[in-house]
Image (cartoon, rainbow, N blue to C red; front, side, top):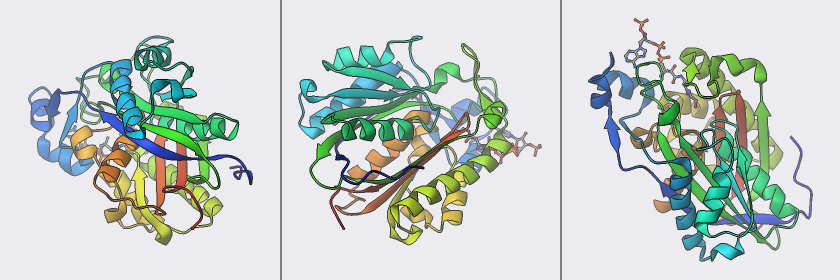
Length: 317
Ligand code: UT7
């Protein structure tokens, strides 16, 4: 993992937004169509309900518009749009559609790193700011319900739809990103994958085992690079896959679970959207103060992983 070059232009998050479909599916509703139960899903995953519906572009426009409004920016001020998604609406052009509907006049790209997508997109956007962009809109959106096999009790209770967005703005002096880590191990693709046009296939137990290890490794690399320890972290924002994965990763990292941001009980696993949804929830609840150290950490199919250590608001300690 490379260090951030001294003097590189930094950035801070100046706005955020979220979008969730209106349609809610409870565990009991799922149990009415397959051999499962509310009790099993709650205790094994932490998920109580999930939201499904909408398109990747539609949800992205909603969260992106909110983020722009909070940042107080008109669309012409954005220099680049990065859309993290593993479920684009079309073979290409989902990011372009979002760019058009938001009234942006900049480049637009899609990043696909499965559930780590938002981490990859966020690092990429910081890189573009280091190279001269003044403002970036980073959106993580997935509509996994479209690629979920609703007859498979091994996956259907987990996956859902949603979107989260942040605006990044260049700052003079140190930005928020103290360190980052991105990882991938293609030998693990066979435990969590979807063919083009197919549905999600998963060896749940093995994904669970690997996920904890990948998250802990990635977070530790980023924290070491940032020169901080687990004790310094005020808030950890993990990928929202399973509360037991989050608990196990927090235990191994030495971060009390009370410091974790969690929304999966009401959202399910929304892949690229899960970290920005959990981050926005914690920010809206006033859980982050200027200068706090925030650890974002994700993992996903591929398998991929990624972490960022942020000093909220940027600047020096
Ligand atoms: O973004 C990344 C996406 N993927 C993940 O994060 C998935 C990671 N894995 C997991 O979250 C967990 O492995 C699952 C939630 C998928 C499964 O939980 P588990 O504790 O690993 O359960 P298991 O697969 O060991 O199954 C335990 C039992 C089995 O029955 P027997 O063999 O003990 O009789 C399963 O057949 O639970 C059964 N089972 C279910 N029962 C009710 C499996 N799925 C269900 C279900 N409802 N939905």
